[in-house]
Image (cartoon, rainbow over the protein chains, first blue to last red):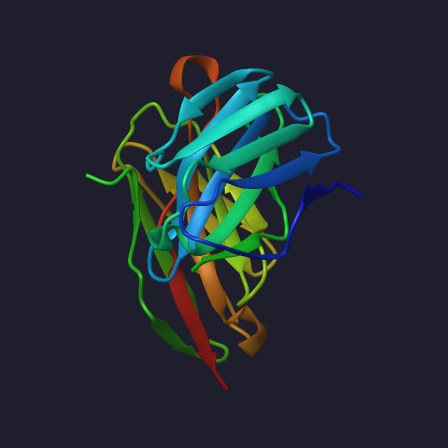
Length: 114
Length: 113
């Protein structure tokens, strides 16, 4: 059974804190993604990675960074958390190849910044 | 222009009718297209993917792709109350070999008994 696991289901952090969201996949996938989901806005791509130590900015990278030191792990970092980063964060992974590939999602982390 | 656009709805359809969901995309280099379903409080789950022009059928679901017009649609026949969910269109845009999976804002569908 394929699995993408996010480290926390719910998280509450204070403004200005450095926050780490962890995502681990066990499918040996090359591609991993971080999205945030807000009502009415769908899934917005923050960062994605197509290989170890390789990363690309998505559509809303401001205020975030990422780390991919190992193939199975992709971390999202909020350098200094702000209230407008309160959201649902979803991690996904996908195999290599542009055709017939499915992205698998983690269970999501609901982050509240107070 | 957004990379992937959907009507946010909400879309309300009577039980047993056909629900039609539409999506447009901006990048002509896009190669594969996906429809995900997301129930409230849950993660998205894949319904169908399509990468060739035309129709692709899977049970009550039909995906339609028109690359010339840059749109992809999803038809749900014999709609059931359990189909009530948010439907997300996703497009795989491959910049220089990487895989960039971009989603639309989702269409909220309600099937009325």
